[in-house]
Length: 471
Image (cartoon, rainbow, N blue to C red; front, side, top):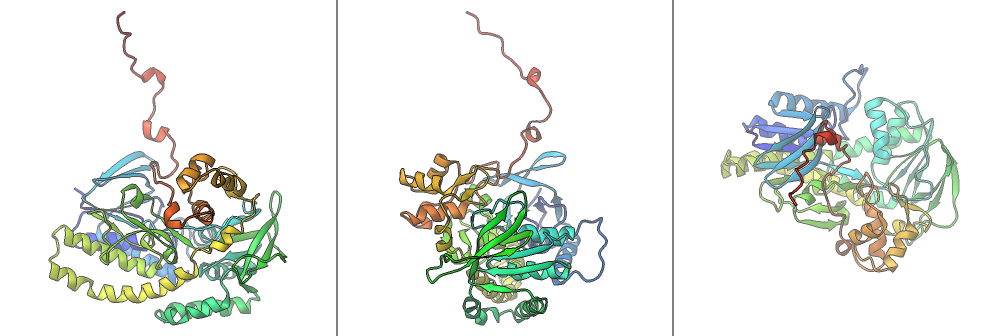
């Protein structure tokens, strides 16, 4: 019998599964990737030869992977979660077919998705997300292009830019929506982690020596090109937070762009946990206690899905969630639980202070979304432009699910992960708040999957047909 299921193989999930298994719980970790690590600690494929030091993130991720192996937790990699039900039953699909898992406790550690700001040309080949660029560089040792612009907002800009430079690529410019004054205002809280602050300062110095231009208070307003990206247009942000009319272009063959992170709440919404909208913590988040318990008994939430706080805080949250499960399953006494978690809480408070400051820099900027041109595609899966969204609002759509039904925005393969924030901001701008316009309803299947993977091999001849009723 499995005592606890952990969904997600990033820092929070690995730490949760290791801690729970080390203390005697039958633990199963489920993740769709081939190797644990998540986005931050993504590992190279096993067939790759590792040469030299791959950096602090790789070392930390490798230490967590080794701890996971020693813990004797069951690790189910390559399993895509497509449904979760009360009870807790988790349904997955893998190369060998569907599988279901059940346990009295479930730790959700599904991390984040990347927020994108729609702009004309953002579907042009050569325009990719910062997360996609990170995957290319970390797990495939590939550059996104020969001459790359890194744009958006938040600490990922510097992380991606320095990775490109170290790999021998050219960064044409960093286009950062945050002004230098915004970064300076966060310094007192960033000082909670002097090691990370020093690493960031070192990156900035390296980028400066490489001749990389950092344009603070600017955004990309258009991507130019047909079958491939040729250049981008950028503009400075005005006092109202909107792009100004005057623009200038930068030649490039790749643009990596991202406007922060959004907590991944698909599973917690599917399980009907209580959620609140907290813009400074990433958007819609599941409510949780200090011990990572959600509003649903037996359901725990670790990592950035409960509010953006960074990889270090996520690992500590995973351990806190595991100890909460141990206490709730009567494997730990109240005194033993308090003793095991006291130091973790202190470390977590410091890490969360740093991560929270980063989250605030990445918080959604409503003025940018409201400046989206009428002809700009907002939902790229269903090719829905802003003009159709505005027309639906004019016709009476007052929440995102009503607008989804009228326009199909959010109905594509990504299920609104790419356009959800943009759609919600446009609805809220016309009469409401992000809390009142809501979020897209989570429904199974959570991820696209072929029907054949669920129903097996049969044709119409295998369907039993009852005899006709007598006349």
